[in-house]
Structures are given as C-alpha cells and as structure tokens.
Image (cartoon, rainbow, N blue to C red; front, side):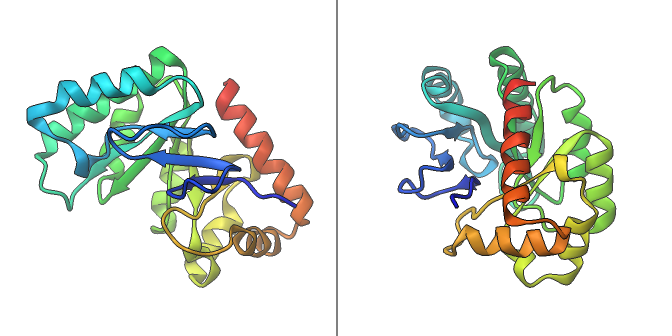
Length: 208
C-alpha cells in the first residue's frame, strides 16, 4: 500500500507534496511553493515573489510553506506582510496553504481569517488547547514523526476529526508507513480506511 506524504523535502518521494526551496526548479511531481519566514530576503523580496508567480502552476499543489516564526531574525511586521501577501496569492490561484508556525499560532489564526482557501499547519506538535483553537478556526493539522513516541500528541491525534488531518515526514528520515500504522492504531481504524480518508481530505482541500 502506498501512503501519501503530505509535506516532505525529498525529491525521490513522488507520492506526496515536495516542499520546493526558494529559487529551486520544480519536480514533475506535486510540490508546494512559498517564502518561508527564514528565507525572506527584504532586499530581493520582489524577485522572490516573481519566482513564486512564475512557478506556482505546473504541478504546484499548495502555497507554502509560509507563515510566522518567532525564532528567526526577520522583523515580525515584515513576516506578517509577506505571509498576508501569500494568503492573497493563494486566494487568487485557489490553492491550499501549508503553514509553518513557531510560537505565533494566535497571530496565524488572526491573519488566517483573510484566507479563502484551506490552511494546513504542518508538523503540528504543540499543546491540546492550541490544536483545539486551530481546529475551531477551520485549520487542518498535519502530524509527523513525533506521533510515534509523544503520548500527549497521540492524544491530540486521537481527538482530531478524521477529516481534518494529514501525515508527513517533513525533513525526518523514516518510513511514513510507520506513522500511518501508528495513527491507524490510535484512531482504531484499518490502514486502508486511514489511507482512504487522507486521500479524501486531499481531494477536499484541492477542490474546496
């Protein structure tokens, strides 16, 4: 059984969404394209957006990863402006968004109110209250390797509706089949049912 990897950084994985690095040539499999907070280059911002505009078609599945990060040196106001501009782009081209967020979840929720397309928080690994607040504001959650060993995160997965989440490897080196198996056990459904549900969720975010 093949398992869809919602967010990854490995070009050899074809059954998933490859995160395209800034100025990188896209693969001929599904990818996402965005300006990550740590990659914002204020002096060349218009060039970065031009690259996005030229590259966000072909096999582009989503805009991202983009968002807010309290640990990078880029000024918060600039991060918000760049994020908001990408929200508007996603609205225009009608593509879902893959969101990177570090310690700025409530700011992301606030700016996310301007989004007309589905927004997915990738690599979610925070407290239950944050998960509940994101879900209440129509965000999806994408879970990664930490689910294999983090008991509190397993509890969040258990309580996340089946139609509101995805599974990913991100930049971790492990077999995503392990994650699908663990989540199928947590959700008490078969691997086949879980796989079908993830594909249905993909169809939902792609087609609105």
